[in-house]
Amino acid sequence: MFRTEFDDPEGIRHGGLPTFNYRCAPVGLYTRRQLAAEGLTPGRQPIAGQIFWRRGNRVAYLYRRDLAVPKRPATDAQLRALMKAWVALSTCPSCQTEYGYYIPKRYGECLACFEGGTR
Ligand SMILES: [Zn+2]
Image (tube, rainbow, N blue to C red):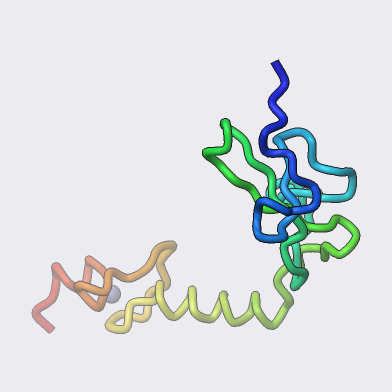
């Protein structure tokens, strides 16, 4: 049986937010997850509506597909900064060896230095 109790396209019962049943969202309104599937994010647009599902126990917000923006891949500068941070965090300050993992903060140096640690 088809439930329509949450249908409220004018948002009269839901504080002005257009409300729909799951699978009844109008064309052009997407959930964040649906946008992500197309490589998009809602951007700075306001929530355009909401859908209830699981008998109203769960709510998902809807965004306008035409206002969504592509997810930006990290810029070169961001990647360089990340790489630098990565190298700094995975280089042992004692022996300057670069490892493929973060130097444990607890030791402050690589395990070899820590365990050898009588310098
Ligand atoms: Zn070391």
